[in-house]
Image (cartoon, rainbow, N blue to C red; front, side, top):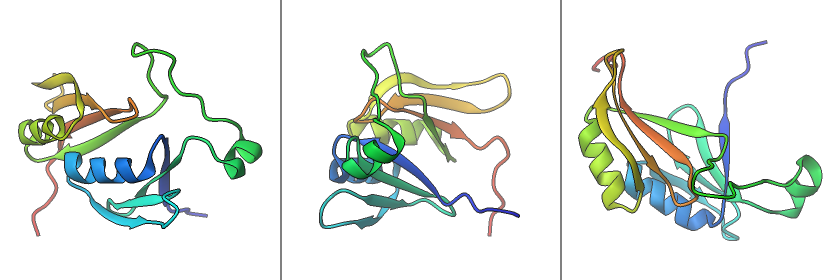
Length: 137
């Protein structure tokens, strides 16, 4: 068996705002936003980034209630990591689009440049250079 990693589902306060924010701040194209605004997706390569409301009967009753951090010192148990050729430009775009700065991009000892922001729901987004640059087509 060799399953494909199909989706990462993120539980957010406002699906439509999150889809628009990720498109503007991080450069993703929106793939889908259903009419009820209870499901949204981004074009992100082989694995889809999807958004759904924090609380909904279907998932709360079936798999349990989503808990959000109680303070700004806490954070959700997930972190997005997006790779960019120009981390400084990506970081600047994210902050100008409403992301909360956490740590400006800096060179790491393993040779990667990394910066951190938080999204609309306080989720940490790591923006880093490619450790090994992808091949050019």
